Amino acid sequence: GKNTKVGKAVRASIESGEVDLVVGTHALLGSNLNFQNLGLLVVDEEQRFGVKQKERLKLIFDGIDVLTLSATPIPRTLQMSLSGIRDTSTIRSPPPMRKPTVTYVQEFDTKFIYEGIKREMERGGQSFFVVPRINQLDEAEKTIKDLFPDIRTIQAHGRMARGGAENNVAAFAEGNYDVLLATTVIENGVDIPSVNTIIIQNAQSFGMATLYQLRGRVGRSSSQAYAYFLHKREAISEQSAMRLQAMADLNELGAGFDVANRDLEIRGAGSLLGTEQSGMAAKVGFDLYMRMLKKSIRQLRGLDLPMVLRTNVLLPDGEGSLEIAQGEGDVSHAFVIPESFIEDA
Image (cartoon, rainbow, N blue to C red; front, side, top):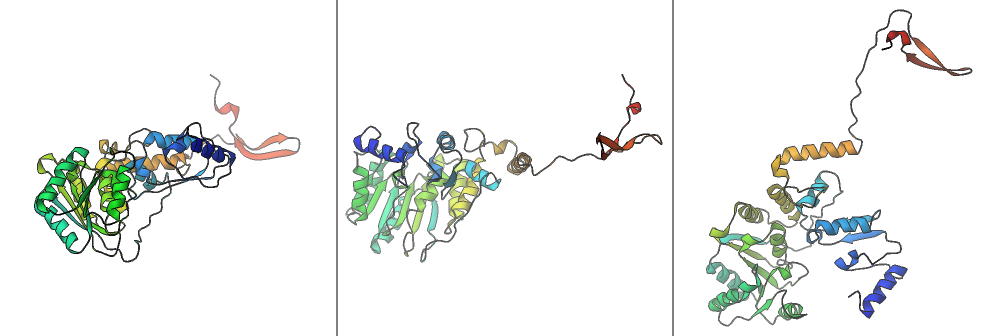
């Protein structure tokens, strides 16, 4: 906290330049924090930041080098990279011994829950079970208990007491439980190699980046991982169907950039100068939008210079001059149209 004794001491050391590297959260965007000589800003999980926060970054850290990291950049950011506004670099090489996650997209049925958890328990592994809302956790736990009466389950969500979710995830990581029921709090920062099955209920309610990040929680060892995206037929929309189809199609290692590209096609690029991080492109068509954007960028960068029309002026014989006196002894060779060529109005 900024008002605690420790917080004040950290801020003072940052402002004085005593520390060389600062690792922090959104608190670094505060208006009352000053850096002595900041040279590099690294933003991890860029898709978790809103436009206002990114604009705040530009204002505070103007003129420094910025590196943003994301497995699935949002459409607006990806559009900036594809159009040349930002430089981009893609890492597609996975760690050694990793295998692509086998992905199933199915209408909700308890047989898929039974199949996934049973397979994992038989090989001594653990499973994640993810729901979109906290009030659905108890119902999901009851469903699992009905299928496996002796199974050991534990929950983790954002409304637990301070440190509760972290402690439960830690107990699960130690192997004390078979299934962790959670919301999207496990989307980032959870790395448990013994967990190689994830079941996502009501998958139609999640965005594409979240689905990809959740699938990335499994398959973090040499074991074959499995991901089940279970949806409700009556609740699925056209866009959510396209998202789930993309997850079924793009299941190779390092497919995050392809997933982000598909998300860009589905939702559009958003407004580069406004606050919308998706949309807009559908109004004129994606291909036309891209051409218009690239043309504008080239003009702003001075790469597309306007064409200068060639003009021939025909004068009567003996009129006009190729020499213009600039000063004493200085003659510039240029052509001048005589005053008699155009009558005064």
